[in-house]
Length: 326
Image (cartoon, rainbow, N blue to C red; front, side, top):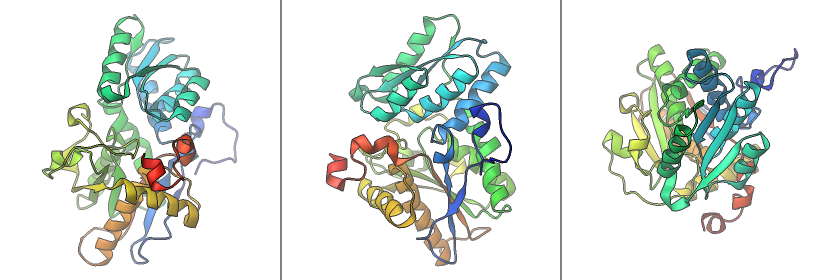
């Protein structure tokens, strides 16, 4: 966990070192641990890539001092990048599909970023295209592009994964995490598999997403309510490495919603739908291990809770499933 024993000079120094907490609802013999990324200053795991990507881009000369970043984002990455950009003396512009959380867009603006919306029905693909169009109009602009930039994966290999392994003294049997850009899971998976190639790696997506197609699992593309993970077009998810993944678990909106409600009511976790989906999948893997159906190097499962439910209150996240999904 981030230490408060000594003062620090910048909010950037408070990013990372988040708590790893055992879930109470998992099987006794196979503990499930969740990394609580809402403890970051921008309240999500994307603070990690915001700082890491911009610092490396400045070091490498990919972005000039005082330049502008233009990023297509559903919100949390924009918040993480906005925090880092201001502290590093950069301007920030975010291209966001209209349907995504109003709270996230307000926070990006509050942190000094300019928010430009694209039509919901044109998806993230249009937001990506628009970001590159805007960058081409400026001499000092760069698109970090979380969906394809290897620095996204590298950030989690260098920060998130070592924190998990240090906390568990290296005893990690399975890693289960949601895939949006896929950077989080790929970074942790690569780190884990270097330490033990038998570590079980599971990607989590919503039902209606098509990540499963990349590992030979048939998927029917459709709409889903879960935010932050999943894809409708795998061509935009360049970071996903199928060879690192043992399975892709598709979770129904209803199951994710029921679990996020349970996590709040029973365990005090105020988390969003992507965490609900990750929790369902992680407990499923733990039960398989406990039943002897899955052989892993250590009888522990680790998952990620990427952000807080407070980002989604305006979308009725704690109302009935029918109200939330409508």
